[in-house]
Image 1 (cartoon, rainbow, N blue to C red):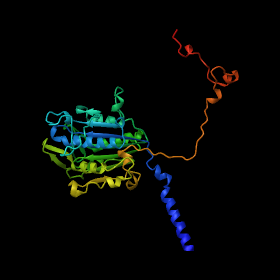
Image 2: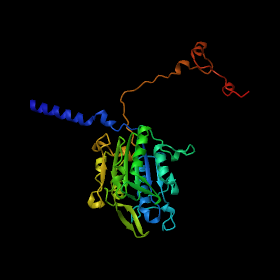
Image 3: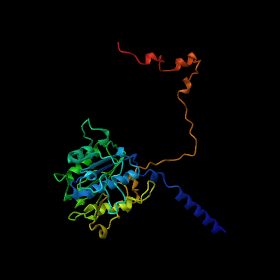
Image 4: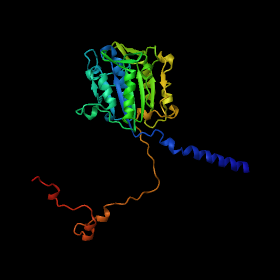
Length: 345
């Protein structure tokens, strides 16, 4: 009898502990808003897959809640309107052509020759001309979680832009340091799909950065498959398997960044995915993927009723009557309608 009572009590305690997680886990991320900077740095028709890469990530983050107003999309070439495209105004990331990732509501912020190293660095650091519209600005703050995704052709320590210039890993590291000093981010997730991609995050030294690369130094990052209808590769291997994982993620999902890092083992990617976690303050196993790929707000429901006092109720007057003692208590002088809009002399 005593053993049964003790067993019942222990079961009740376990139930309560699992049903009521600690408050610090509920607000583990400490961020209040999400941003995404998505960059395709390649042009020309044979680089169709790079445009499909970035538009696929764009589609995923929008589906998970990040609005266009919080996405900076940089596309170096307009494959949807390319004369070689047999299906104008479309971009597909699969030979089955099931999903048009260009869609009907894509908002490209920087396109064509606007996609330069200078503009990319200016977007990150906020050093833009005053005439730059809000849609082309990264208006983040110290509570912003930012996803930075880059795709294109790279090498050991650089990523090419437009086949005419390149950004080095040192320049990128310094840009992130400027962002940290200017309180432009809370946490950054850096994701890059290019050859020798690991080299692009080796020089990072700013805090709260989590990074993943599609290949190690000395390795190529390969394409996945060709679409015979257009005659070019339509997506890269790492981004393909990353999207396969993201398609099963919902806004309320509890899948973690650690799970995301394992989406493309070497036998699938034909390259070794590299991860850097030493600058990141949290455990990737406890960091949910929507902290970067979505825009999910934590809401705490209260059971008690809060009575809010109306600060203006003390000075309220009826239509026909307003006691003088109430008028005397007001600190604001009441003006007639005409006097609210004084005319210049």
